[in-house]
Image (cartoon, rainbow, N blue to C red; front, top):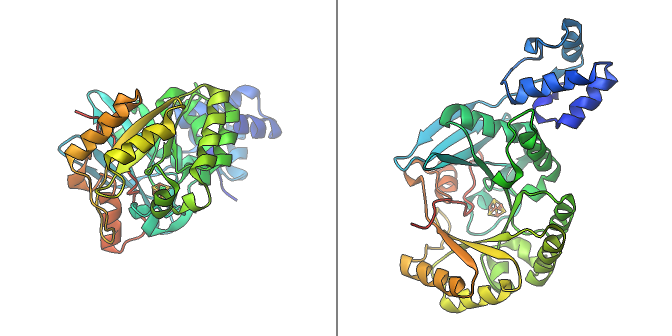
Length: 359
Ligand code: SF4
């Protein structure tokens, strides 16, 4: 059976190299060849003895790569890569450029089980989770086409804590000094808010940034927008966040997608401020992207600014994220809209993850 080396953290490679009787430094050669040098075939990891390379091939070890089947660019600098991940399924990643810095918004699942009502991915349903190799490959392929990636956000298609092992392994790989060496502070993991997973994540004490989808300041509205909220009341979610902060002392960002006359009133801004005031919290306000079959509409800019100002006056750092990459359907909502309209297989997330900063 083929074993994908691309998705194995360094410690796992070390372990099997030792089992196969290889020297400890073989693991270093192998990991660096895959994650720093872009080698595609174990036979080409030439610092390793030929006999050991032969053993790897015989045992079914492979270096699996992803290849984009489409690459689109928007005049605003946003790029979208579409990947075929096998079995007819596709995912998308979006590269957002800000000056000379690039952020990759990547996918961790084909589709999503969480079914948030404002998200096209939620409408597409769930097909399967990606392995760690397919997750890190999105970073390497984006860098090869768009230039160095400075930040990675797990905000594309899928819920990271519904694919926790692969997501954590991918972070270990991206962070490893023999590979890309991407600092943990340059990685953001965004969740719809699963308390047990947040508690377990806290135990790792990593410096990875945590973002949580809030989208409503009360349970009734949040349940309407996010089915997961039916199982997780806000009180329980915020208790998990408090525990996370007691352990890690790290700020948490709350994502709030503004939809006209749904969750964008000044009163709701005040309720949001009251909800978060005792936390070390920042808020990203996201401009909603409409898509077919979804009746929500974006807030107008005045209401967005008022919402931001109400939060800002209470001392909560609040930033508006405007839509980017609309002409190539790389803005959230637009991406899912394209897949829904075309009746194609799973496309990218329409989750509210646009990253343009408040001008
Ligand atoms: S917003 Fe995120 S968690 Fe919700 S359905 Fe979309 S991808 Fe899944």
